[in-house]
Image (tube, rainbow, N blue to C red; front, side, top):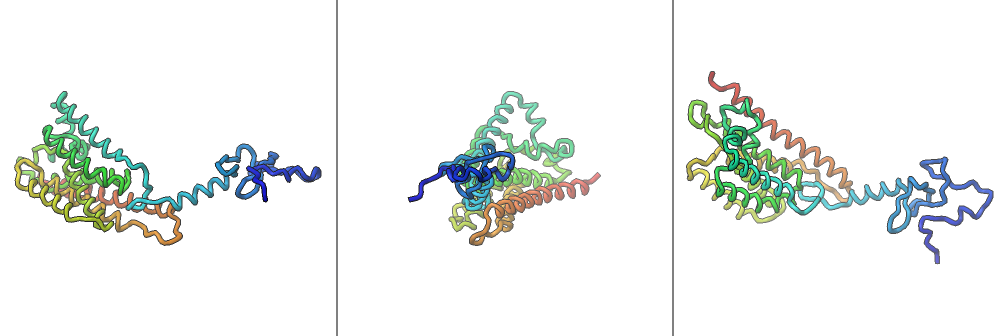
Length: 305
């Protein structure tokens, strides 16, 4: 029975006249330790200890690439990542901190963070900052509860980065709709809009599309979206433009991600497909942002002087 070598070959000392083995990557270094996989000598700098013995740096890289190629991917073709919804946690924490700021310094926070169509050219950051502010405790609790319920599922299904992209692009899309649909001659042009509802509605649309593409149930999601739209259009002082804009942009972006997702064939390099998927999805996010910017620019240049 053959004895294990554990990366060391005694045969290298069997012939006193033979040249000593040297490391292929460092020919000036003698090494009697050999790679368990390719049997080439490996100097201390090129040795990678593993549970099955010593591997050279080249074999270790090849095995890492092979493992990455066979690693399972999420619904969007990205890495499975960690299961905890860290982006959801972060957004909820920022919204709570922003509400504390509204309580402690209301004038400063509202002046710098609330979205108002008439001042967006001077304060463009309010397209996003307004999504962290809320009009009261109940407004905050309802939005955070919805974000918590939807975020736990979607973030694990889509991945942290894609989930964050859909949420924040939906916020941008919601306030873009408010700006585009606002009448410059009405009070709405000077009114303020705030809340995470645009992003939450975008996640509602994303959850519908994800479930539909994965063969899950969608009837309950449609009922949820329908009930929220009824509330949006029947209760006064709710920005239906922001809700509708977030719903449309979030749905379009998620659908675009699925449409651009590369199909994995048997034996395909999953790591290469994941990189291609990331590039295509980044382009989809950039396209959604560009669409919002074009709508804002068109609205701005057509304003009455």
